[in-house]
Image (cartoon, rainbow, N blue to C red; front, side):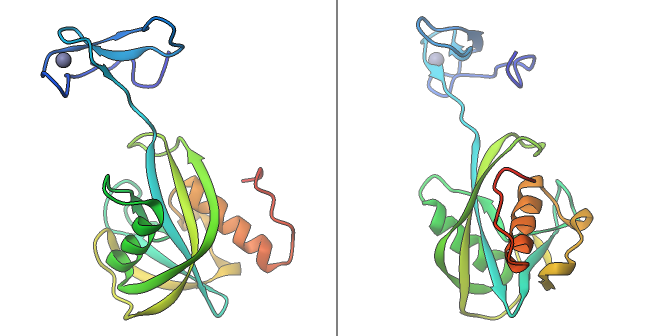
Amino acid sequence: MQDGMSESPGFCRACGSTLEWRLPDGDDHQRRICTQCGRIDYRQPKLGAGVVVVNDGRLLMTRRSIEPYLGLWCLPAGFVEEDEGTAECAVREAQEETGYEVEIDRVFGVYDYADDPRGRGTLVLYEARLEGGEGRAGDDAAELAWMPIESIDEAEVAFRQHRRAIHQLQARMRGEAADGARS
Ligand SMILES: [Zn+2]
């Protein structure tokens, strides 16, 4: 059984009628299907984006001001809005949460995850550098910090995919080959 199939499948976004779980002809997944108009309500994992900003051996981190994982630290990141791309989202989230303007250099990594209580998803992290602005926590961030990369305590870090990215960064700082499969 897929995640969430025991829950009520909800209502049709087109006509408002009840949805039901059914396997469409030729499909390999049970879908939420409208009992009235037959519209299939496809669901995809959530898409998020964020930044890895390193300055003088320190990583820009924010402390969460909301659940889940309130009070723990993470990279500046958030969910992609429907009218933006992942890189745009990463820049926007950095600005909203830290006050810094950043410019994207390259993709740092792409992470699928299933440990977020809001649902599974994919996070795209970009390496970025400071372009301006003044450090000021905002939006979902209560506080920001430039943490010395080697001494970041993973018990203080929210989300497995953020911990993985930090491990990879630490390995890179030590000159080890990054191993994408390890967490
Ligand atoms: Zn419908």
